[in-house]
Length: 371
Length: 46
Image (cartoon, rainbow over all chains, first blue to last red):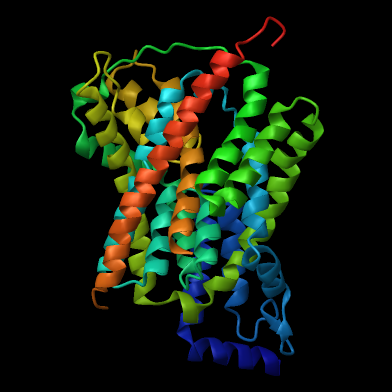
């Protein structure tokens, strides 16, 4: 009883804890009711409540690290969790359509513009360059890359970056249409594209992840943990003799890591770290990054259209972000709204897969430039 | 907060080298993809 009274008094003395608990409830609401990235937001939401209870044993017990802290140290500080997640993601990706239409790779590069735009804006706002880069990586639209880069650069905004990265990824269906409509005309959104399906051999699919590792390693060796784990997962999928491992990576591995990742990331959701004006800035900059990614992709497609006879629907450029397959679905939905007979899903999906490669390359290059 | 000119310069440098670097990597991957599809065309049993 005494402990209960002390706990209630501590909550009253530090209202920030109550605010964070409410934020935890909102995260769970978004995950459960709205189904926005529930695999991460639900554990993160409950974790936020747990770490903000006065004297919480999940953070420390009698001066020793508690279970959340142990998980954080083992999985995030060492960067193992995001990397292991990449094995599963790699196993889920079929690079076949991209290999058949490799031209779409360029949209993956163009739609990373938001990262660099935000780094500059954050630097202008006075953030240290390591924090500015970590905030910019939110615009990679790739949660594991955001965690990896923010942790490697020692950013103090890890909690806000995580919340922003995963929340905005879930909000892609809201953010992208607004951004795209702001920079395209109805006529441009109605452009039809001819899809030429090409067949890709098994050998090419097996060699692709191996060659990408070598290329990325030679250009930006720092990116190898990201690219290497992603491509290892893809090799499991494509090699044809490790189907059991591929299925495990896509399901059990991703599920287990998601549970642990969501819980232990909440270590950074303690009210003293999170409830700051900077957190709001980080969230705002993350949103700006997502918008500028879409704008960058669209503008690049428009630029290419200046030289092309066969025009590209500029919305395909916006699909070059890493949020797969959500972004390509959003683009197809928008195309159908403008012209019910317009089918650009395959091109958008190709650009979307390219965005997954480009986002890890972006993370690696930013680290290479700053470390 | 104040504007850190060094950080700003670094930000612009990252924009040039980083974004440009992604294009370089993606163009290389583009060429690799073309080469792979050319060297290893699909066979009947694929």
